[in-house]
Length: 65
Image (cartoon, rainbow, N blue to C red):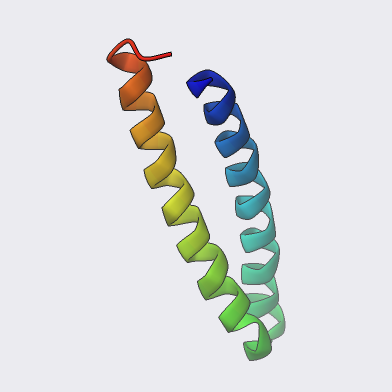
C-alpha cells in the first residue's frame, strides 16, 4: 500500500514540477505577473508532496508495507 502511495506521490510531484516550470517561464520570460499566485500555489504543493514522500519513504524504510 505504501509503495503504491509513493508512486502516486511521485507522479503528482512530477506533474506539479512540470506545471511550475511552465508558469515560472511565463513569469521570467514574458513578465506575466498574473501567474505569480498560481506559481506560489504550485510551490507550496510541491513542498507538501515532498514532505509526504519523505514520510512514506521513512515508513517503507522502517519495514511498513
